[in-house]
Amino acid sequence: MSRVILKSLTRTAARGAAPKVRDLSLECADHGFTVLFGLSGAGKSAILRLVAGLDQPESGEIFVGDRAVLGLRPHQRNLAFASPEAPLLPHLTISANLALPLQLRRTSKEVIARRTKETAALLGLESLLNRKPPTLHLQDLRRSELARALVQQPKALLLDNPLAGLESGARAHLRADLARLHHQLRATIVYSTDDPAEAMTLASHLVLLRHGVIEQQGPPLEIYREPASVFAAAALGSPGMNFLRGSLKSADGQLTFKESDGGVVELKLGDRPAAQPFVGRDVLLGIRPEDCIAVPADQANGPTIFQTLVDFVEIRGGEALFHAQTGAHAFISRSRTLVDPREAGRRGRFRLDAARAHLFDPGTTQRIA
Image (cartoon, rainbow, N blue to C red; front, side):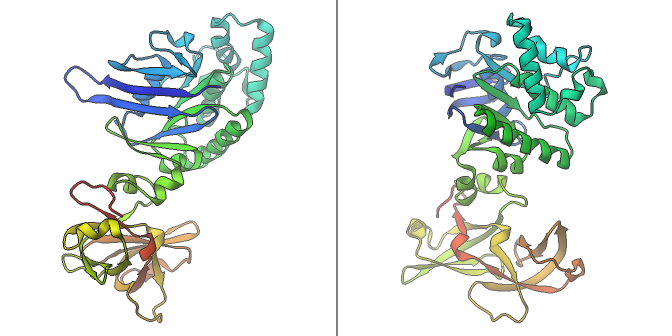
């Protein structure tokens, strides 16, 4: 396996249109699991197609290991590309589909037979090798597409939304298999998804993309805990971060956030030197649902507790989500204590964890502190 390095890549979508990828530089570590995450149109697939050699950039460089690969045809790069947009050949058996890329490289029959058997075993496909793709369930079809990439033993695996179309249970199961295979094979994987849970679960290095540029990158938990922008904060988590507009005031060097437009939230933030230039100015306060905590009705009032009407209560497995209004903004509170959904319509009390609150500049949308 080898690292994949991109330097100043630009790829234009169409004549006169905005670029799919703009001056993008990225290093995908050897044996790492790099996840490209973003909404449709963020540039995820465009990046993978450029690395695979299926498209060519207007400018930039691509290295696989220490080898420059621009100008090389896809089969010369020793990379494997898997995508639902590149399906298995329907008239061939799964065994023949797995063998085909090896045959094109003039691999010996003995090696093809051995690799096909080993790869099928890795993904639990032994009983399906004589079946054809149209006869498979979608989950087995996705496994077979992954097997066709793995059997090539490439320098890096390029997986473009490989779990697309699967229902949540099957997707979670195959996601666990991918994590297992990565650890077992120590593969270099570059993976694209628009599923935030998938991005957080699989990535050793997460790359958050927006309109063909990198919004933020790093370990997934680091991005989750310290998002660089409103976009990054909202993109990860289900549900995403709550945002309240207000202003900052200062007394004895201690900052307090006061919600605007008649909202009920007033939160003491302590000493935050980076936010001092924003005293007296509009800011956005961001706080995740798990840091906005429902508290018992008999708990004493405090500077971080406010009371408001609960619009409805959503039950998600072993947790409850309170959907409420501060008076100026909608917000969601996550609770591990299940409650009767009929609690909706009553007043609830919530405590904000000030230590976990974020401040953003509403003009630039960048994180302040």
